[in-house]
Length: 462
Image (cartoon, rainbow, N blue to C red; front, side):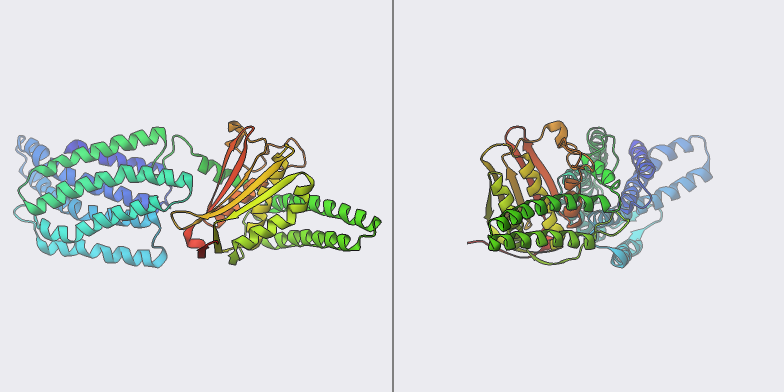
C-alpha cells in the first residue's frame, strides 16, 4: 500500500506544479489523488510502518501512528467519492458560479453524517453499507457526467482531450468503487479491496503514456493544434485587421458591380445599371455592419445575437456573389436538408459564409467551377454546413496552418491571411467548430458545426 501512497502523492504534485492556480477541476483531481493516497497510507501504517516502529519499542510513536491510521482511513474513504463527483461537475462546467459553490456544500453533507455511522475505537469500523448508499450515486453520476462531456463535445481537438481524460479516470475510479465500496458493503471482512492498487497502477500507466504521446489533464508534452490556434488568434490587432480584410472582399464586389453599371449606362440599360448600383449599396452596408460588430482597439468579436434563419442567410450570401461567380464560370449548388433557426449574430455568420465562398472562388482555376453548399442535422442535434469546391486544394503542410492569422496560401500581397482566422474565431464565439478537409488537385471542404445549444428550431426540408 505504501507505493500507492507514493504514486498518488507524485500524481498530486505533478498536477499542482503543472496546472494554473485557476484550474479548479484539477484542484479536485488533486483532492481525489490525495484521498486515495491517505487511504493507502492508512493501510501502510497498520501493516508496515507501525510493526517496524514497534521493534524499536517506542510506545508513544506507535500510539500516534495508530490514531493517524484511524483518521486517515476515514478521510480516505469518505473524501474520494465527493472529490470525484465535484471533479466531474467542475470539469464538465454543467454548474457554474454560486450554484456550484452551494452544490459543493450540499454534496459534502454525507461525509459529515458518516461520522455518526463509524466506530473510531479501539480500531476504525466504517459502516460500508451506509457509505454505499451515497457513494454509489456519487461514483455513477460522476462517470455518466464524464461520458456525456466527451460524447457531446463537437470540437474535434477538445473531444480528443476529453476522451483521454475519460479513459484514464473513469475505469480507475469504477474499479475503486466496486472493490473498495461495493464488495466491502457485501462482506466487511473481504480482502479483495487490496486489488484496488492494480486500478491505480493501470491509471498511472495510461496517464504517463498520454502525457508523452498526447497530453492529458491539460499537461502538454505534445502541444495540440487547438492551443496553437487559440494562442495565435491573440496576435490579431484589435479587430482592425479583420475589418481591413472584410473591406478588401467588399471592394472587389463594388468594382465588379460598378463596371456592370458603367457598361449598362453606356448601353442605356438603366434597369441593369440600377440593379448593379443596388448591389454596390448592399456591399457598402456589409462594411458598415462589420464596423458596428468589431470593438475598436480590442481583439474581441462582439456578438449581437438574434434568431437567424440559416437557409435565408446562406441564400442571401449566394445571391450576393452569384453574378461574380457566373462571370468566372463557377456554379453554386445548394442542398438544404434542414430548415434551421439559430440563435447567433447574422452579420458575423454571413461574413463567415462570404469569406469561405470568396476563398473557394479564388481557389478554382478550372473552366467548369463548382461550389456545393450543404446543410444538415448532426446526430448530436446540432447542424453542419459544408462548403465544398473543386479548386486546387491545399497541401498537408499548409493545412496545419490554414487558420493562423497572417498566414495565407495566396501569393498576393493584398491577401493578409485573416479570413479563415476570423471565421474560426467567429464560429468559436458561437460555441461551434470550424474544420477543413482538402486534397491537392481535388478541392477543399470547409465544415461549420454549430451545437444543439444554439438551435431554436429545426425541421426537415421538403
